[in-house]
Image 1 (cartoon, rainbow, N blue to C red):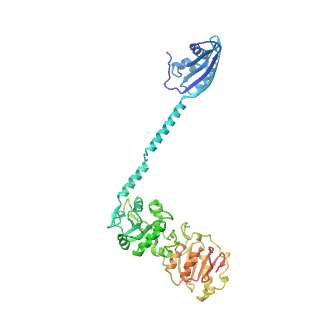
Image 2 (spheres, helix red, strand yellow):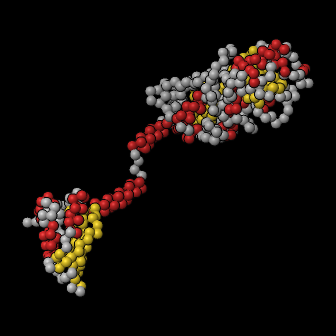
Image 3 (cartoon, rainbow, N blue to C red):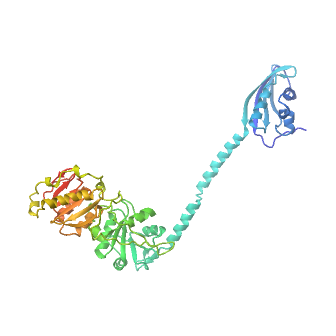
Length: 463
């Protein structure tokens, strides 16, 4: 007995027919089976395929009008698409039904699974939308939530003011002073457990903070805005901190990534150098990077307390080195290619000193040449030298430390730097009664300086 249905219908052959006479459904089905029998061999014989469950019952939609019969034929199949198309072509070969001529034409071979796919995709979209609406976190988010909660639970209250602090604030020899509780929490998330928050306005620094800063090695880690400078001034007026670190311009400590935190702490500067840069008005928000990298100690296995080793400016002259280009140095325009000695005039063409400079000791010609020649020695090193009025070198330092070094150096007569002479450098040099600056080139100056000699490789004497 032939099977009347298929468990899986892969394709549906749909054909229309026109018959020049009045016939019934069995006549049409019999014509299809009879005229295709033996046409394609036993493997594609309709009767055999139906017995084996490869095709289903042929359905006929029939209509009759004016002694003619017309309608549609539907043939379900579970064959592959090539065999299905062969059967569809065989159906088109039927040309008679009973005594009447007939025409069969296949309109389409439809993949019934495509409709299922559309329904599956539509349903999947609905399920995903519902899933997202319930805000189910992924494994990474769950880990971060758990870690954040654990870190938050470690925040302690320290001192009579109950200031937010890390668990190592009492036992650590070094502390990091930040502005608020959120800053302490962010440092805890990044395994820094020796931070304490000021927790108030710049005008009301807690006594606990003052005592801790005076007793321990303290780093003030401040936001990259004017508010951070105000808090720094307030603390420094009442206590002796050791270092200053600041977040990048416009950022707050609570928003920094781990990389930004480590970078900010490694580029901290001594308080004396911070005071030398100035902390009011148009004070620079970016600090000068130190010439030696800072290191972190790890007293705890999982939550290491950050400990930064202090680095003093070198006391003795160092041989010229070629440091890596630092994009965050305040003297960004000091990074220049090497310039050969032939590209500038010799020192003998420096010209006469200005009226005010003439009152200071005048360098001998050979001393002048020695200082000018040091530009060649420093070329490509991004370093600078300080000279006294006898032409003796006082100190050689990286350019990034020049402004701070000028403040605690005395008897400086001339500065030589492998970089750019800026207006700020000239103004600070005038305050220290320095009489000459030699550099690679100079930025445009807003006014003439008559009390100092400026000389560059590119322009020669410019004042």
